Amino acid sequence: MKFNLIFGHKVPDTDSVCAAIALAYLKNKINEKSIPYVLGNVNTETKFVLDYFNVETPKLLDNVKLQVKDLNYEKTKPLMSNVSIHYAYKYMNENTLRTLPIVDEHNKLLGVITMKNIAMSLINTDESKIEALYNNIIETLNAKQIVRVDDTIVGEIIVAAFYEKTLKHNITFNEKSIVIVGDRYDVIEYAIERKVKLIIVTGNLDIPEKYINSAKKNRVNIISSPLKSYQTTKNLCFSKSVNEIMNKNDIIMFNENEYVGECKEEIENSKHSKFPVVTKYKKYLGILSRRHLINPTRKKVILVDHNESVQSVDGLMEADILEIVDHHKIGDIRTSLPINFRNMTLGSTNTIIYQLFKENNIEIDKSVAGLMISGIISDTLMFKSPTTTQKDRETVDKLAEILGIDVYEYSMQMFKAGTSLKGKSIEEVFYQDYKEFVSDEIKVGVSQVFTLSIDEIMIKKDEYIKLINNIKSEKEFLLNIMAVTDIINEGSYIFYSTLQENIVKNIFNLVEVYQGIYVPNCVSRKKQIVPGIMNVIQYM
Image 1: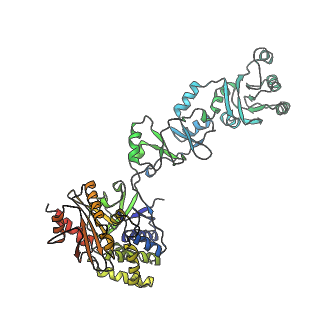
Image 2: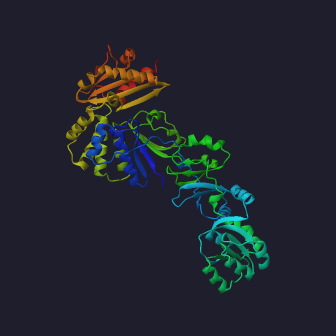
Image 3: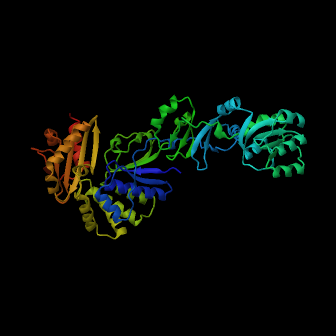
C-alpha cells in the first residue's frame, strides 16, 4: 500500500515537525494512510518536545525523486536455475514473456534467459551428450519413472536402433551411456548388464518386472517415454537446466532505490528491452521495460508549514502534491492538478491542524495535543509574536484542557531547552532555523536564533559575521542575515553580510546600523523581517 508522505520545511522547527506528526495522525484516523517525515535534524527545542510527550522523531527524508520502485514494473515470477529449458520455454510461451529471470533458492538473481538463448542453445548444443536432472528428463519427455538411482544424469546418448548382436559388435555400452530404445528387450537386458547410466524406453511400452528388478540390482536408471525414439532423442536436449544457457554476466539490472533520472539514459541506450529490478542484496523483484518510464507512480506528498520549493524536499517536482497546510505567504510551488490548500493568517500551522481535527470530528490524543500546543507556543513565542491571533490563544486553551498543564510553566521549560547553545558550533546555531527566499531571481538567507541571553552570541560575534559572509558568497545571495531574538525582551539583534548596511537600514527603518544592532519589537521572521526584505528587493 502506498502512503502519503507528510513533511515540513528543510530546516525543521517545532511547528513544522509537530504539524507533520499531528496531520499524519489525523489522516490515518480518516483512513488516508500517511507517514510523517523530517527533512533535516530536529533542533533541541523540538527534541525536548518529542521526548516530553514520548513521541518518536520522524524518519529523515532525503528526497522524493522518482525511484525505480515507484515504477509499475512487471512482477514476473522467476524460475529456479535447475528447471529445464523445456519448462522455461513452455512457461514463457504461456505467459507471453520475452525475458525470464532466474534465481537461486533465496530469490537472489543469477541470470536471465530469452527466447533467443533457447533458440541458440538448440543450434549450438551437442546432442550426443547430456547433463540433466532426472526430474527434468521426466518433465520434458512427459515420461514415467520406472527405476531411479541418481538425481542427476550425465552421459553420452546412444539410440539403440540395431539388433543386440550388431550393437555388441559396433557400439560399446558403459556406465556413462544413456540408451534410447524401443521394444528391444534383448538390448534392454544387455544395457542393464553393462550398467549403463540411463535407459529410456520409448513408445510407452510395458517393461517386464524381471528387467526392473535387474536394473535396481545393477543401479541402472530407467524411464518410460510416451514418445517415439526420434521425438525422444530430439526433445531430450530440452531437459538440460536453464543454468547452462542463461545470461550470467554483464546483465543490466537496477536497484529498486536507484533514481529513474539516473537510469533513464542507460535504459534508452541499451540494446536490451527488459531489465531486472533487484534489492540492494540482489534479491529479484521484477522486470522493467522502457514503457514503464512513461507513466510512473509518483510519490504522494503533503506539505506543512511551507509552500516554497526552495524550502521543500529535493525532487518535489517529481512527486504529486496532494495538499498544503500553511500559514506563510504564498510561494512558488505549482501543481498540475487542483489540490487542497489550507493557508490561513494564523500564528502556527498547528492551529490550522487543530481546526482540521474539529472539522473531521476526530478526538485528539494527549500526545498529539502536546505536540500541537508546543508548535503553537513555539511559533507565536508564547503569544509575543505579532503573528499571534485570537484563534491561536483559544486553541492553546483548548489543548491545555486536554493536557492539564500550566502553559506558562511548560513554555518556559521548552524555551530554555530550545535556546541553549551549549555544545553547539556556530554553524549548528546558525542553521538550526535557517530559510532561503527568492524574489525575482534575487536570493536572500535568513537565520533566526532564539535566546534568553545575547552574551552567548556576542562573545563569538566575529565568527558569526565571517560565517554569514562566507554563506552569502558561496550561495551568491544579495543578503544574508542572522536575527538573534530575545524572547523575554521581545526584540532581535541583527547580524548581516558585510557592506549591506543600506539594505539593512531600509529593511528595519533604522537611522544607523551596525553588527548586532538591537531592533525592538522585532520577533517574527515571517511577518516582520521577510516582508521588509521583499519590500526592499522590489525597488532594486
